[in-house]
Image (cartoon, rainbow, N blue to C red; front, top):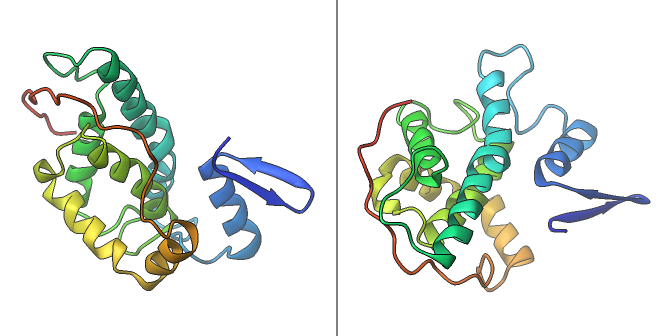
Length: 173
C-alpha cells in the first residue's frame, strides 16, 4: 500500500494516520490549530476530506471514466462537487486549516493535484484552489519535498481521462 511508513518496528499506512501520528508524537504544537480553537473543527474536517470525500470520489470518477466517459456529471459521486466545496471554502479562508498553513493543506494537495492532472477537474473553474496551490507550492518545505520525494515532479503514471463531461450548475455548499 502507498503511502507506507516504517515507524520503529511498525508499518503504518493511510496518509491521514501517518500525518496525525507524526504530528502527535513529534510536533504536537505544529501544523494544526489549537484543539480549543474555533478553526480546529474545519482543520480536522479537511484533514479527512482529502481521503474520505475527495480521493474516494475522484478515483471512482477516474475508474468509471476510463471505462466509458459519462455524458453528464453526477452531483452525487462527483469529484468536481468536492472541488467546488474546497473552492467555496478557500474563497473565505487562506488555508484549509483556517488562517495558517496546516497539515490539512498537505493532505488536500495530493487529491487536488490528481484531480486536475488527470483531467477530472478543470482547474480553471476553481481560481481559489489554483491560488491556494500557488501559495503552497512555493513554500520552501514543499520545494524540499519535491527534491527528496519526487525529483521528476510526477504524481504517478495514470493516463488522463479521455473526455471531461460538461459541468452542470454548481450549487453552493
